[in-house]
Length: 162
Image (cartoon, rainbow, N blue to C red; front, side, top):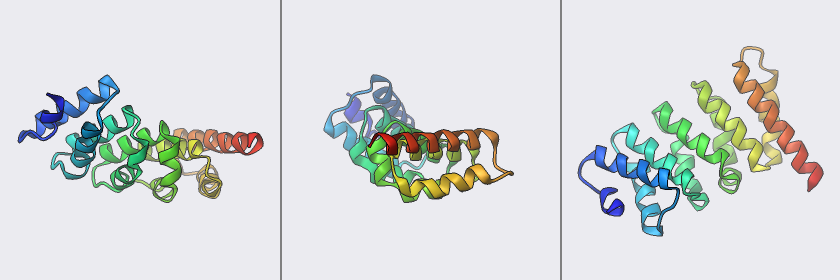
């Protein structure tokens, strides 16, 4: 039923199916394929964001390219959904570090904050310089700076442990 709803002709039905899969937190491989397709093709940004969120909720770390594309979406809610999902998927975040570093310059502070969080979880030493730049920016949103500091702490702890 949910699989069929992901390819329904009604955008609202597709978005609702994606949201439901995300709430369930589990998906078949065919559902993951359907969510990935919806994330890249839905005309409605709500549908794209719902699909990206659901991919994160079901742990689709193997779909890093979908998250990277969503980080470049025209809609800030889609970009936020991608950055947020990557914060819970360190393997995927590690695969898209350049896109996350670019997201640190996003117009939307929510995107920048979640991108910083995801970079910390990625374990990528290459993210350190970009995060330090955020922390040093006196004009940056305080929540984004806090997230960048936490990410730097996470990277430092991972380096000491590894």
